[in-house]
Image 1 (tube, rainbow, N blue to C red):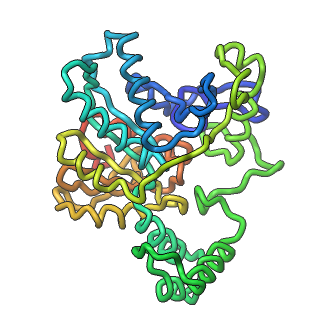
Image 2 (spheres, rainbow, N blue to C red):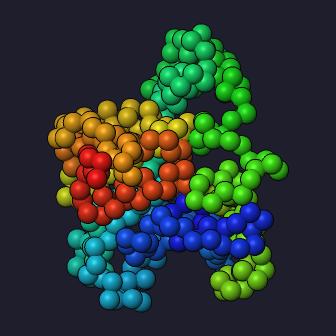
Length: 347
């Protein structure tokens, strides 16, 4: 409701308006609320709410198999997955599980053709290094603070950070000030925020939260809100996460499926810099050099094709790419579906 869905919520959280750049304009889409406890998903077993990377992948796989058994007419369709942020873990882990289980003859085969991850969290070292370098190159922290971090922090070490490193990190986090880390150039949500149509509204999450926690809406959606956790929520408890999923991504690039990573370039949470640092660790050879891609007669961003992996930036987009640049995001998604690079001309 804040990004790529068919509807967005109006100011006040009482009505909907149609999103002209919804991704279901070009594909049939299943929106999965995962892991357990997120959204209106629920269980009668409280231990199901203590989840993590391994369990989340297993649960999502079980859902997909059961869904395809319930709707067998979709079994032969191409299946592609997208996600953002921590989906840098969710998507490759689920994709790996699908590919492995597809080899077992008594399992339902999921016709996985590709994965796309936006502003993903892939690797703890790349995340730390890239975040502070992004702050510095985007004039959010001073030369002195950046130099202090570079000189005192070893993010590749398993040892805990030194006191000096922690002090400079604290200075960096304070120096940024009160900005939207999801989009360093976006306005903050306030009581003076005007109603936005077909543009990014910094209060849009508040509208959706209000809408989805309205009793009449919950009744219409047949949502169960009597168990744990009750109302619609965005987060769940977490139990396990590996420091890196780059070996999984490398495995996917060798599997024959299409692998796309994309980054809104104004996000400081999982920045374009952290993704580029993660990509450098993969050591992939370049197939199509870096170029500007276009949509609506403007540069939509930049793209580079590696062997079996495509990396695309989205100009002017933050952490939630379809929220900030819906038209560019739809062009990107359509290109991913077609297994074609984003258009390199103005048409």
